[in-house]
Length: 254
Image 1 (cartoon, one colour):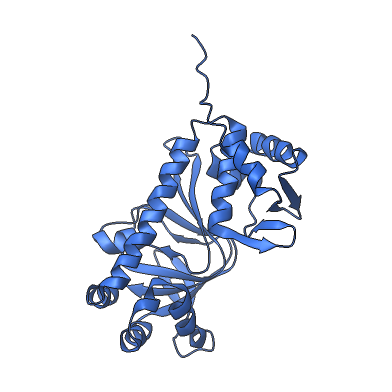
Image 2: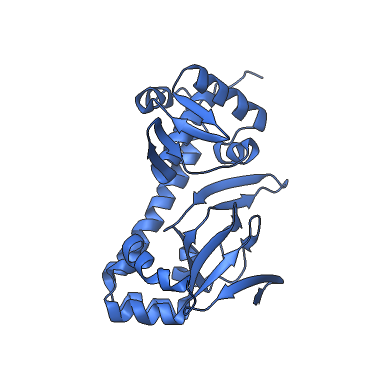
């Protein structure tokens, strides 16, 4: 067991049956796959696997950022809170995604909160062990930077989307999630993510009631289907056409 900032987490060593799966996963699904075998094996020996039960706060904004997490299983939401306590969902992460790369690279504190949406497993490595290895292998460092750039682009897109009318904003948000977490399905693209309408609203910048309304309208337009709380994009072209409605929110005269 491992206790961090008052939270007790179960931790497995890299000799456990679960950890035996870490090497091929890291090799095939992450930036660490560009490392030579000797460097990857050294990093795996220095890292460890953690399990986080559903709803666990994995890390908090402004905590020490001395480690990088590679998600092996489960989903994580990245959030911050406004001054009045409203949650803003910045991103959803899944297997193969990184969490903590900003703090690891700049040596400062965490930039956001990370919360397990479901039972999660992650490979965790400390910056003191990671930085020397990736510094010696520029391709791995480049891939971390590229992953960070993708997140910054997504964050910029969210800010821009908040100027759109609600229907276009909802459509663009679903397309963005499909690009990140979509899985090909016989009925279209399945969003490999199960969240409440409130959580989805915190990501789209809409109230729960407006999320319900917009999803209902998109369903009536036959561009999405909703089954057992999962969203399927059945007409990607049609959804894209709705998303391209770039009318800004109208300013109401005072």
